[in-house]
Image (cartoon, rainbow, N blue to C red; front, top):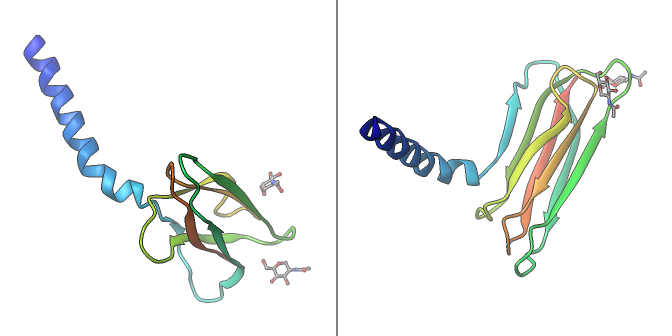
Length: 118
Ligand SMILES: *[C@@H]1O[C@H](CO)[C@@H](O)[C@H](O)[C@H]1NC(C)=O
Ligand SMILES: *[C@@H]1O[C@H](CO)[C@@H](O)[C@H](O)[C@H]1NC(C)=O
């Protein structure tokens, strides 16, 4: 029993180690841009580094009643700063989305943020 438990923990640790590098460079890419979709919103989301601080901001995009979001893309510009971006509310097939951009402690962030839809 003890042997099985230890084995499980080791696998979990190895998996975390393998996943960390890609998940710390957390580009947010959901949905697909297809023919007829337009760039509804684009902005550069930038915050300089601040010592020993985790910084964040939320960007809200709101379309009109008929807007349907088909893709949301937040990609780090330049060298990674180990920042993260994720959807807080709204999203694909809706007319609005709120994305949080968050720095690693002691770093800033610099993202290109695009919302596509029709
Ligand atoms: C609503 O937004 C879409 C883009 O999502 C645009 O193509 C359309 O013209 C807008 N409609 C109105 C009534 O503003
Ligand atoms: C976002 O869209 C959803 C579904 O279309 C709607 O229920 C919600 O109220 C909207 N939120 C905001 C903040 O506009």
